[in-house]
Length: 502
Image (cartoon, rainbow, N blue to C red; front, top):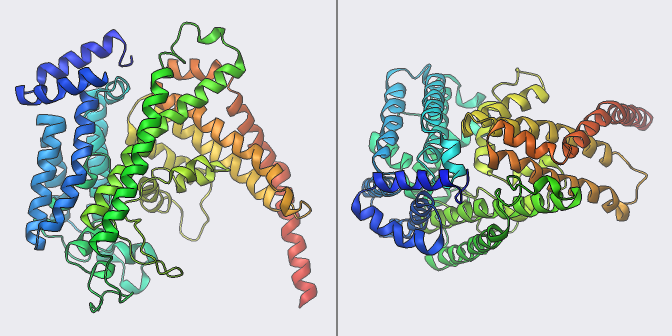
């Protein structure tokens, strides 16, 4: 179903029927003008509201009042967008905090399992995949962000209770939660309005230091401020906000324009889809994928602007250029995604904070001590990501397939970099085919994310004969045979050269 299907209209009518009169009075005019489903209108208005709410933090003088402001505005924002479902936020809040209060030794594991179990149950009972597919965005997206938050905080609190400071890795030192958080501060962080609707999930330690003006958020004279430079003034901060708003608006326009001509109804689900040529299919799924990404670029860059407006988005000063960084809430680097030459580069630029959460709280933790992570750890991480998104087959197919795509492109990329005989000026001849495969492959995989059901996903991929999948499997075979042999040969040559040098 899509926003133009009878099922989607029925879903929209049911949502209107559940709305209070004041909410329907706000939504219906916007929905009638834009043609968007009511759930999308509510979501978009809540996202827009995060920016002025971010500016509002400038006017709140003390940490206590800023926590109170964050909790109240976040609650109201969720209630506006998702109504009575907002109580789910307080389930996460109370149960995760109570677990940390009762047992520090096991709270990380218990909160991880409990929050994911609760989220999975909500995904199943609310049929979140079908709702989102129809454009009626429900509260599960918000709760996905809260899941990342409560698991990270509880795991960091648990680890700080058992790992001495001298033995902590750089990440734990940066995000350390030494003592049980103040309840109001924990609640204010969890419902922080600037990131509540679409994320990203900022760490509790980052919120705490910003709230109390510590670290790079502190005054130049503060002992915790290593740079000894005060944060940028409001003029520089608001100039950054203005740029981010313009940048996000550009992607909003791209998305709206593309969606006028290319949707899942006019491509994958069109009765004439299988009559089109293979080249036409690849072109249309490519444009559809590009346009669909535009909405994510828009949402995440807008949320970043709201965080910069509040002040929490400031990430200190670059050690080389000495210029201010605004990367605390950076969740996407659009041009990094579009220019990615391999699938390995995409997680560094797409849904960055979720990728960091997966890296630190899943990938690293499932790697045995003293061993290098491999495909098993990558696959487990992608499975967790799929479960986090929902129980629909499309999510699982997307993330499991992406693990194979990453593994295959990584092997070929390493082989490529070992080709010392190729002049640097000619490296583009090797890079370009990989870039084509990456961008076409990403848009091809996106079909599973949009269609969500198993039959529709397999039909969509089958309509282009699974060519990207087969290509990547060939890359895996190449990297495991020719690539490994080349790597072993290069390693042997280096050892011989080192021996001669000695």
